[in-house]
Figure 1 (cartoon, rainbow, N blue to C red):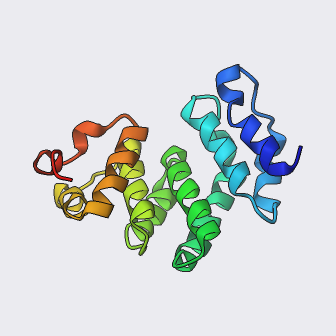
Figure 2: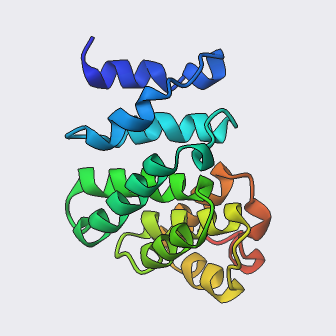
Length: 167
C-alpha cells in the first residue's frame, strides 16, 4: 500500500473511532507532499476529535503553509488542492491569524478556495457580508463551489435565496 492508499484508508479513521495520533501534528507539516496529511487532520477536526487549539505549533504551521500556497494556486492543481484543504482546516483554528489568512484566501483566483474561505469564516462565526455570498453565487462555476462548501459545513441556509434555483 502506498502513501496515497494509506491516506485514503485513514480518511475513514475518524468515523471508525480510531484516535488521532498526536505525532501527526509534528509530522504532517514536514512532509514533502502534505495534502493528504492535512486532509486527515481536517477529517478528525470535522468529527470533533482533533482540537487544534491544543496543537498551536501545528495550527501555526498550517496557516503559514496556507499563506505560502495562496499565490501559487493558479494552474498548479496540487497547490490548489492543498490550499483548499488548509483553508477548510482554518475553520478550526481560533484567533485573529486564521481570520487574516481566510481574508487573503477570499482574494484567491480559484473559486473553490474563495468558497471554502467564506464557508470557513461562517463556520468560525466570523462575519460574512451578504454581498460576498451574493457575488459568488451570481456566477455559475462559483455558485456550484459555494453550494458545495456551505453544504460541507451544514450551512446551506447562508446560500443566497435569489440564486438557489439558477443553473
